[in-house]
Image 1 (cartoon, rainbow, N blue to C red):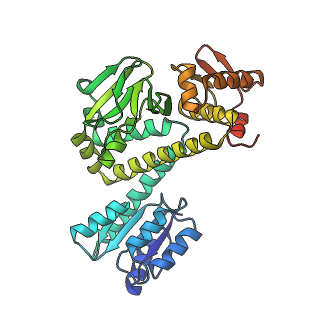
Image 2: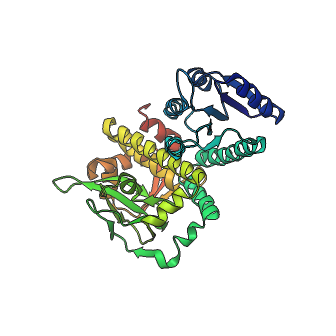
Image 3: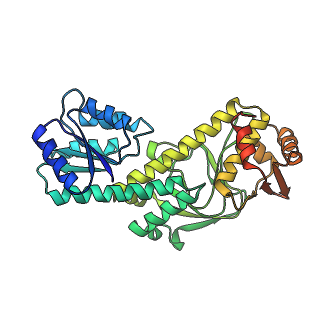
Length: 356
């Protein structure tokens, strides 16, 4: 039975809505104000939250802001319930990350339909996020394609082939399109004043490039280079904005997946900043295994040089080669040319986390 938290300061409204939801087969927990609602949301496992905006002690915007910062509640579907109808209030709620917005008075069917839709979407998102590596991204993009015909945006006429080592965009340039990788692999890198390259990310099919510069309305902060022959769809910025703004659920899901990518990169960079050489190399292998391998297919094919791989780990090439040799002698990896075969990912994960 799905558990819904209803945050509403008006007792009569709270009791009426709770009765409707209980008759519909939901378990309902209620809170009489925003502060109490936050406490209950954090303390319990909630599947969906319905929250009024105008409340004493803490209004609905404050509730959503706090819950979005808590990892436990940040992905819980959130529906605003309010008597306010001004466009600015609606937009403020959406910008904060609300999934839907119902205006009082409303029909019972409208409320139940909104809840059912959000719960269904939430289950799909959970399945995507729990998938390994880039598979959740590919499946999400497939869903977007089905819902919004993204294939029209990445059709053959908008696809460009980049040769190995060819630059896709450079640091300091401003975005005119959003890049979507259909085939191949791309590295994102930054260079020091002395010309030393540091690879910040390796990207593959089903991933977007250049979206951060678009969202921040700024220039690219890194260079994107094809590390093997790649097919890249060039999506006009206005078309991309239309895609994102056309469907709120797609917007929220897209942001959540991008947030996950940012978190993963932050964790990797943190390990690289404070880890020793063995931990750094193990972190890189673990990261690549998550993107290009899985528990049944342990082969990670890399079309990059050992120098580039060392740049990804933030160490000298000699240190990388020596550590890979050590890992091979310890039975953690094997290799066949540029193909790394992961023999013991659990052991490598322990090394990456500093546990060994």
